[in-house]
View 1 (cartoon, rainbow, N blue to C red):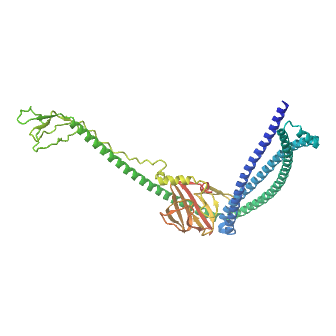
View 2 (view 1 turned 90 degrees about the vertical axis):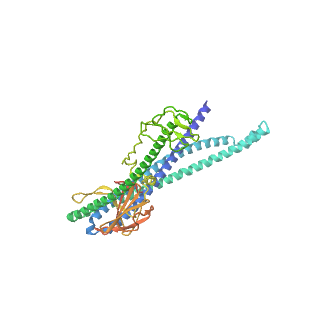
View 3 (view 1 turned 120 degrees about the horizontal axis):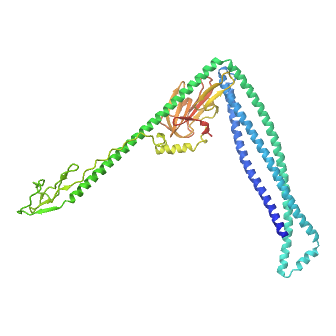
Length: 518
């Protein structure tokens, strides 16, 4: 019983050690994944910070660009906060790493204690049986030769076991040393991250001070600022209206095509029903005539009084003929002379069933198909599905940085807050930089707005618009591929800097492009 309890205890210790190792390995895997995501996010933020700094430097110090300076500073502050939060994530990951290292060190120490205890028992046993005579006596006291061989093998395996114990102790000790070194490195890394975060907080304070300075300057230019804001809002309104008009036109054309196809199908179905109805009526008439009873009258015989409707054909014929009649009337089969001058006639009138009226023409409904007119054709359905599956994966239309987001925005600190509604997102980029399609589609509109152009692409029921283009390299009706250049970035009339307005619509609804871009 004691041996059984001891064995269970040892098994429990081993399971605990194995469980701790499993938890530790899972934690390390999760930490690695989080660290990779954090580093990717940091690289992206650093790139955006460099781009927004370039955009800010382009308008810095110019009096007419104060509003754009303020917008760029607001974006810089936003990115700076995200960068500081990213450093905070790094510090938390380092803390987790230090914590899990401490757990691993504790586990390894417990394992080391177990190994040392087992090794101590073997050492004590070996000391008590250290005489060569005892080993020889152990071998020669065997009952048979095979038993002696087994005892020799046992002694070898026991010696190997002791060596393996020693190797395990050394390996475990090395692992503990490595963990200690890793823990020290993590603590130094944490100290560096804390210093970096402190420095970035200082940069953030400088940016806020600079923002306040620009805001004060804007307050002294309230009149010019209001004109600039009004012009921007008017341009956004006009742009939104123009693009919505293009989308409505596309929907109207798709609706016209769908309704025309529906009329053609309805006409074909009506013709098919009419033909089926005519065949059914003819079949009923033939059945009625086939059911009439013929009577043969020989020449010279005195026939019975013929029915008033019976007539003898003036020309001989071998066919049975009938006259069409209206609904609800009867017809009499004509008596036709045969070659032997006998007459074939009906014994009585054959009644045709009352004709049913032809089926009415189907009513063509003007109801929109499921999913809308832009989700009607097979090509559009496939394209819409492909586009929706790329949510969050679309490439940026230009190498630049978003300085003004989608929807309602507010620029504070200039007296009355500047409030507007952006139909898409506004990129700041270099003048002449290539503008690329974010997805494959068709060019449905190329228009002028002031001195620049805007291009609208259709991707099934999805539409993308690229405004403030200095030049356009595609033509209306052309098919474009994902990533294909469609034009170049134009200069902002107010500032002279490069700007691109990018708009995404699902039919007539504006949506935030940032959700769809990677």
